[in-house]
Length: 365
Ligand SMILES: *Cc1c(COP(=O)(O)O)cnc(C)c1O
Image (cartoon, protein in one colour):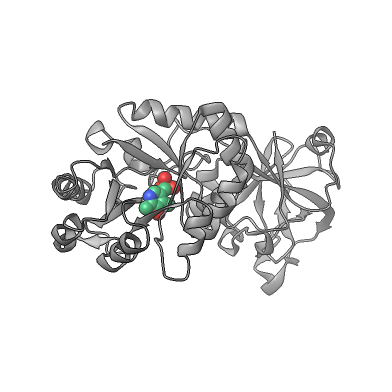
C-alpha cells in the first residue's frame, strides 16, 4: 500500500521503479573503474527493458555520456530522436552493421555502423566513402565480427574509415577464465593493423576487470542497470530496477490443498497464500515456480505453485502480520537482489531485465 501511495498511481498491475540516480551512479562507478578509457553506454533492447529515452537522456545530461551502442538500426533511429535535445552530437554505433536494406536508416539518423565482415565493409565504403565506422573483430566468440584472417584485406580498403576497432569477450562472466587473456592478446595484436582507430574490448565485465582489458573505450550495459555481469554478485553495482506487483487476493488453505496449474505446491499445514498480479506474461520466468522469493512488508515469501501468465501465488504463512489486498510484493530490486532473483529463476540478470513485458508500468524515480 505504501509504495503505491507514494508513487500515486493506480496499482492494478505490476510496475517497475527505475532509479535514474542509481543508473547514473553505476555509470560513474564504471567510468572510474576504467578511468583510462571513455565509457560508452549500451542501450540496446530498450535500455535492457528500462526505457531507451529516459535512460539515454539521464546518462547524456547528468553524466555527459556521448557515445552509445545499440544492436539494430531502428533502435539507433529511436535513440537519435530521444537525444535530439540532450545530446544531438552523440555518436551512436550499431552493432549489427548495415545491410543493403538498412543503409537509409544509417543515413537519416546519422548512425555509425559496426561492420562485421569484408562484405559489410565494402558495402559501407562504397555507399559512404570515408564515413566513419567501427570494425568488430572476432577473437574467439564466433558470433559476430570479421575473422582475424580478413583483417589485412580490411585494412587495405582505402575508402574504409575505421575509427573504433572492437571485439567482445566470451567468458567475461568468469574473470579467471584463460580465454579472456587469449582474446585480449589476439585483439591487441589485431588492432595494430588499424593504428588510427580507438580500441574497445570491454563490456561491463571487462570494465570491472584489470586495466589490461580497458583499452580506449568501454561498452557497458548490464552493470548500468544494476545487474552483475559475473557468475557472482558484485557489490559495486547499485540496484536500479525494482519490480513490484500488487497483492490481489489472500486465501487460507488446509493441509493437502494445492496451489496453481498442475497442483505443484501442496500445503503441509494450514497455509496462507497471497496472489500477486504478475506473471510470465510480464516477463517473470516460470523457472521461478516454487523457488523464487518476493519481499512482502519487509519479510520474504516464497512462490507457491507455478508462475502463471498474470498471477503468482506466494506463501505468506510465516509473516507476523498477514498482508492485505493492495499491499505490494517486490520480486527484485531494493529488497530481493536482482542477482538472487535471476538465479532462483534459473536465469541471469540480463534476461530478467530485458524480459520485462509491455504491461509492466515503467516509473522513474
Ligand atoms: C550487449 C553487448 C555489450 C554490453 O554487454 P554487458 O555485458 O551488458 O555490459 C557490449 N558489447 C557487445 C558487442 C554487446 O553485444
